[in-house]
Amino acid sequence: MISWLWKQRKAFLGLFMSAGAAYYIWRRLDWQALSSLQTDFHPGYILPFGAALVFMHASFALRWHFMNERIGRYAASAAATVLATGGNALLPARGGDILRMLYFKQKTGQSVTVSAVRAILEKGMDLPVLLSTVLITYSAFQKDLRILVVPAVMFAAILGAMVFVQIRPDILNNLIARLEKFFRKDSQDRSSVRYIPAFGYLWRTFGVTVFMWYVPAAMAYYAFLLFVGIEPTATAVLVLILFAALGVALPSAPSGLGVFHASVASAFELLGYGWESGVLYATVLHAFLNLPLAAAALVVYVADYDRTKPASTAGPSPG
Image (cartoon, rainbow, N blue to C red; front, top):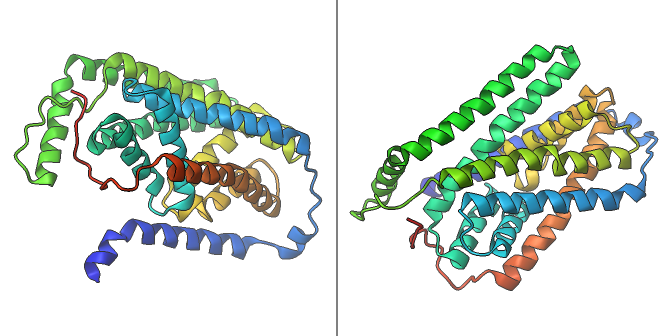
């Protein structure tokens, strides 16, 4: 029983975080104000919002394709990405990310360990972009452009790290190989496995990451603000990008339930709208983001995921 509880610790942590966020939302809500809200939705912006989301997820799939050095077809990367994002909307403890790795192994033969390392690199590339968004937004509020020196230094540091990894790839690769050997407790020689992609693909992956957040994601949130009747500004779009990303990055129940709502509602409150309006808009945005993706993930899982194969992380890896 104790061992089972320990294995489910991520799921329980997510449920705890979601319950805490839901309680926080409930305690702060003025139900009378919520019932008397005057909404100004503009359905004509749903189509541009949806098109921007498709563009964003196509960019997400391209990033995964480059991160894995274009192994297999782009269609496999796109389907794997749908399983990841839609699966996370349905499964606890980021189960969609695990589905992506297992599906990608079925389609390309790449081991789950290599995919896991590259998924961590992928998330690592998100971090400086989102931190830069924080600083850019803060700079806009403070009207002080000197703050922008910090994200410039961060991007330069990332470029330097990628160059170093290209010059001495053996250091990080050997470390990861030893860790995998230790955790698997076997004697297999993994020194030839290339866990870190080549510099050209790392650079392209980082370029797609920056593009993904600042073009299609910005377009989607711009359209959403128009949909709910809010005049979009660059600052408002950046704030929404940041808080929505935070809402799905923190541990939570499937789809960021509760945590996403609290985070996005806080964004609208920061922009000068009431907490009740923020909760309503967050609920609408959550449905728009997750319901189509969950449906698409179910289609991919039923139609193209081979459930007869064992969920083994072993297998051939790109060398």
